Image 1 (tube, one colour):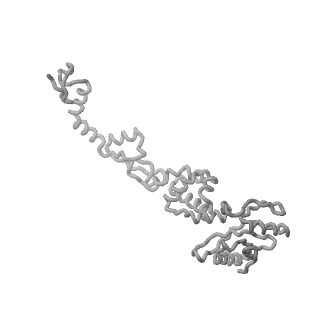
Image 2 (cartoon, helix red, strand yellow):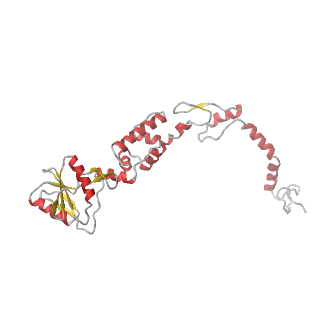
Image 3 (cartoon, one colour):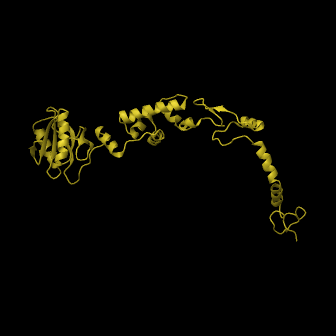
Length: 289
């Protein structure tokens, strides 16, 4: 009985002078026996060559480096900084090279990625913080996914607005409206001069009918006015119920059940500062504030 010199199993077939049980074991034994020698040859060929880059050199150039056993100093294709790796970008440019398609959508074709990144940051900050556009609106304007803009801001250490700030700006820009309470009468109303306005209580319907009878031109929930809420100690946005155009008057319609008197005083203080005349109608009666 013969035992395979590679796997240790019994040799059933007469193969390789009964030293191995199969062709695979014969080949494996040959490689195993010469493994240390093969590893030394590979190590000597690759000595001094670094192959850790995500952007390797072309094969021909890399073979030359292997033969000469040296590391070639290169320059970043973006900023020209010298790098001692077989890569295309330096560490600074590598951080932003993936945003090149976004830069082009912003009409920024600067070859230096760092300069292009600064220009993109300034442009998007102006749109987001000064023009107060939301990420979806920037997406629609430039064709850039808002997730891309979100992570671009994050990579540049720029904090985005929180939910409260975003909602406040949306109210100011009239992009969202206050939801109606289903407990109260609400719906669309056609004014005497054929305007469509949305009313949210029976009190508002009654007052709108009174304005229609007197043929006064008015708007409903069209203004967005920032004021300081002394109870919450922060800025908020007021949406007046009615604005009488010819009288330059803001009218709030409330019932005693829902009235927050201090909050209403804060709103009226801001209304008067801006030059509006004011009127509060509480339970069908005018109230001085």
